[in-house]
Image (cartoon, one colour):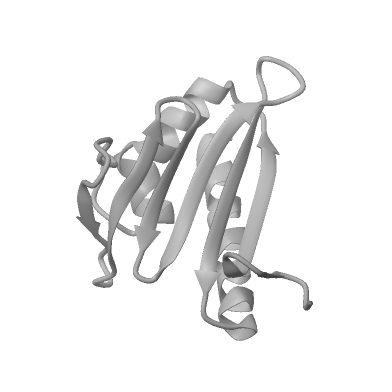
Length: 129
């Protein structure tokens, strides 16, 4: 099976990075208005109720699937699913931020999303530095 293709979730991509910030600070940024505008291109803050709808600036619609404060959020994004997770790093002033997107249509879309999420990660790190 090609890299990034799973039996259950189709094509998927994930990126993660350790950031020199406490996990709570990263979580508050990523779910707050600035962070939501940056990674989801939607007006924030992110809804927290399961089933709550949202719409991005470029017209993609989705809904919150699960929201665990300080930990992770899963949401639909058109026909795909995105999960954003924040976990403690090796020390209390570090956090690991992960973006994962599954149910992508093709290897080409996977590569497009890899480029997108790497760019998002660079901007998040820059904003939090």
